[in-house]
Length: 202
Image (cartoon, rainbow, N blue to C red; front, top):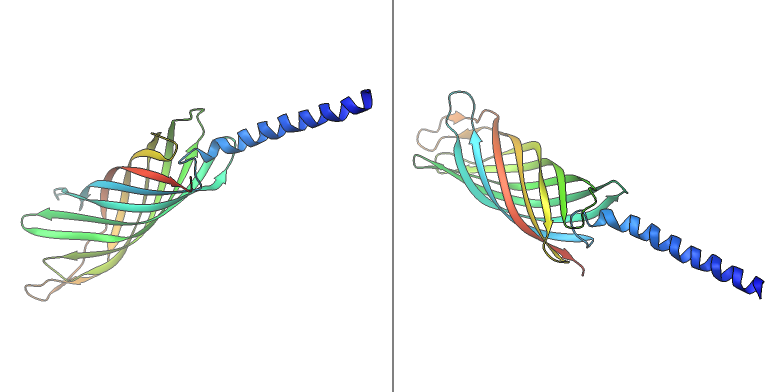
C-alpha cells in the first residue's frame, strides 16, 4: 500500500505549492484592480503658474483613461500603464485658455500588504494642444510626475486620488486683435484629481 500513498502525498504537496505560487503572483495584480484592464474617469483641479511675478490661474477638467494593470507583476511591486485623454479650462480676466491632449501615465505600485489600499508613484508624458479666445491654437508637450492612492471599494470598482507636478511647453501662436506672434514660456501646472476606475473583464 505504501507505494500508492507516496504519489498522493507528492501530488498534495504539488497542489499546495501551486496554490502558494498563484497567491504570490496574484497579489500585485490587485495593485490597481483585480482585473487585467480598468477604465478610469477622473475630475481635475489645476493651477497654472507662469513664473516669477505672475499670479496662478486655476482651472478644472476631465480625464478618462484605460489602464493596463498587469504590465509588470512582482512580489514586492507592480507597474501599470495608463493611456488617456485630458481636457482642462482656465479663465482669468475674461480670457479663456483650453488645454487638451493625450498622455501616457506609468505607475509604480509598492506592495504594502494591504488588499484594499494601494499607494503609487506616477509619471506623465503628454502631447497637447492649447486653444484660447485671445489667440490661435498651437501644439506642445508636457512631462512630470506625482503620486496618489487607490482605495478598493468593491471587486471591480476603486477610488483613485492623486496629484502631479507637470511642466508644459507650447509652440508659437498669433494674437487675434493685432496679428502679432507670441508664445508661452514653459510653465508649471499643479494638478489634483479624484475619480473611479472600473476593472474588466470581471
